[in-house]
Image (cartoon, rainbow, N blue to C red):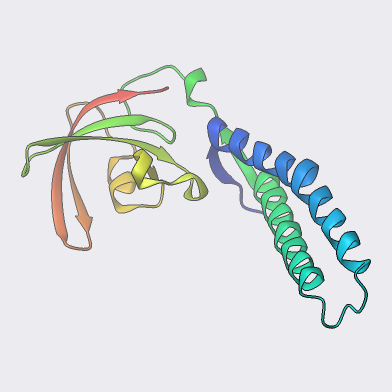
Length: 158
């Protein structure tokens, strides 16, 4: 089986969500189903059907998270000596030579990516272009709208 890279923070977030689903949501839904059953005829009981639908969603999400955690290769970048190279989990400051704008991204696993929080997926065009490069390198990245030239200003392992 293939292992998928995940940051320590990503693993922690998934474990917290899993605990919440198992310890809070699952018991709440079971109670809602029991309450709905007491109301009588299950065929026309909207509360019962809604609770069962929620239960199905929660159980599916639990299985999905457990699967992801079982295939995760957790990489704690803070334990790796910083040699200035862009690696998985690194936070990178890049300078767009065309717009003269500095951007900061953290390279994370696919499930952790959140552009609003400056976290880009390892499989994104920018991350693929940056991986293995060093501070001072100029990288030309092909994106859907063309090409962009970035200079790597700083690499942090945080």
